[in-house]
Image 1: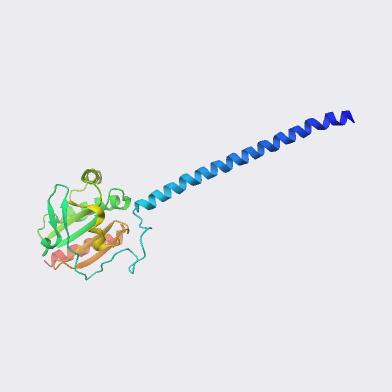
Image 2: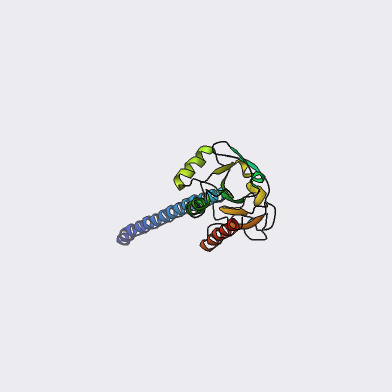
Length: 215
């Protein structure tokens, strides 16, 4: 009997230690999984708070794109300042074809679209006295905007929109960007775009050419 006990006791102790080790590993893996989930959750929440460019946090709208204006409406008037503190009033541009581009430095779609606006629209029409193009930066300080302009390589003027109050005249305040508004010489909206889609951007360029041809 004593011999049997001496044989079984080490086996029993080994089994106990093995089980304890497995439980420790399970707990460790569970803790690691929870930590990863917390980090991922924080990242998602930060992106949602920023309202990043995909516009997934935008409230549902009739047109599905967050606009509160529509083609045919008179463009809401506003006065904003450029990065060099010059005032621009939209109604003072009456008689011109005007393009407004709502943008921000944190918007990856904006960064992708802006070089095309610079090359295919601004450089083509900047010397036409019947055309005006303004970027409207969403609630960022001037130094951030200047750095943004330099990095994207744009030379068209950008207006500062503190609090995104002018943005809120055209779209739901929490709706996403980028978006372009094309306004005719009578001050009425003739085209609205959202995000950067090649076919829609081509249609925008053609519409500008058409309107300027008829000036």
